[in-house]
Length: 139
Image (cartoon, rainbow, N blue to C red; front, side, top):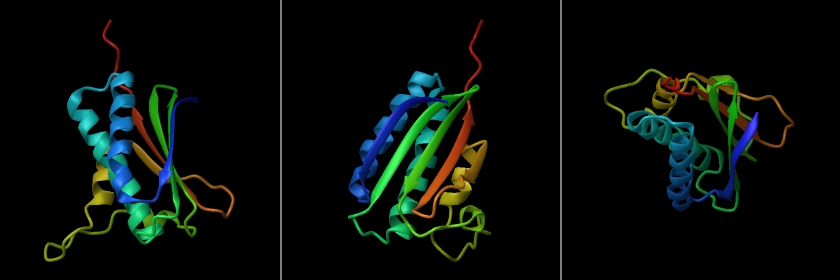
């Protein structure tokens, strides 16, 4: 995998704006069309916001790292935290209940990305990997 961007910031929601800008820039470099770029930016934003909200519980002294790679015809996004360990069930979209607000972030992530899973690592946090096939180049 070829590292395209490596971003690290505090676990503060005010940092999400710069993360969105970096993801948008990388997606432009990858050649994604605008509708796909908007969806990918939203999916990565949702994943990072979930880390801040559920992992760090809005405590801004944590760290969120986003690494963006190009690999075998795919854009690969790694979101790395130092939160308590989670499992695949934690990143599985739950049924949507009409009466309750929220809960759509995981649905968006899974709808936009081609593959979403946790990377096994050491016990000092989590790495969420999201993959999206690169657009076909026109001949």
